[in-house]
Figure 1 (cartoon, rainbow, N blue to C red):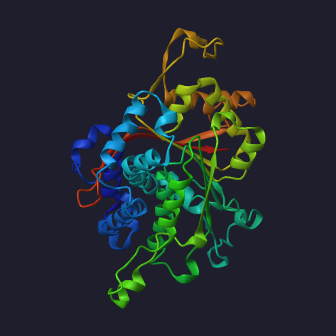
Figure 2: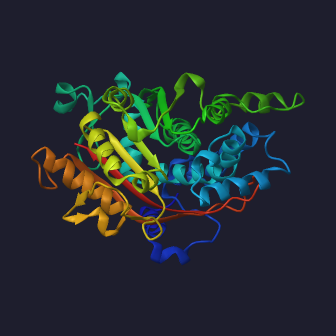
Length: 413
């Protein structure tokens, strides 16, 4: 079993870009591996490989000799900012999902399992506690049955919200697969050694993806791959057939999709999408929204602030700020002022700064709250550069790449 000190060293190394050389160039180090039986990294790789297999099986007919050419066509369209062409056909969308979603799904899963604040809060939100697992000695639990206590911070956490998650820009499916992997891990390994009376029953995970392109075909294939056991040889042994299960049972996961420009949502749509969520994600999406319109994206985040319930989480993953700063558009007729700086001045703002400014300052000031203790948002994780490195033991029909990202987690007060 990995010692606590070793886990902390591994965690610091994984989060600190200055310590990257202390790790193998092909392996990811995740202290959450101790949640698997006997702390086995083999079980973690098996979960990762199962996720890759879902993509392989879902797009088996598309992974062929023509795929490299289609991927290059998608890259050209993206480079030329011709998004209507890049995301305008199922052929291009499936090629995009094959090329980029598998590695991102594994990177997102690594974040979900690694960050303590996110893992503990998300786990407690996504479960329904049994009567045997209540805390009768706690007056807070008795007086507020919808809340449990955070084990480290002694903070009340909502458990009555269920497992409703909205993924903005989630059409390519990476975050959906990662969340399914989290659910599989949480209820296959986390509580495997606990007595039955102390185990937790999984809530149904309700994921809603919203994207400007029509990703319905891609998402249907991935959902089927998540909830359907993989094909197995008719000559397989009885034990192999018994062990052949889906990543997540269909009773515990539902997926819906809305094709919509998120910057043009009505108040009714905002309430429908975010009114009762426990988690909102922007995965490699927010910077693109800022690049489209800073003012519209700021309005979206402020509307989100006034819509989602207290206790909900906001997870933002994107390219590192050193590569994803935003250039202000000087051609816009109407100027938008940020801290006294006019958009027409063509300044560059890191996405992280814009996000913090909106959530931690603007949103709070609009409601008469001006300090970190009483603001409407609490920032739990602030990681400007994090690497996820693929294991060379994993297999996939095409070459995948390591992922570098910035990670930010907020809680709505």
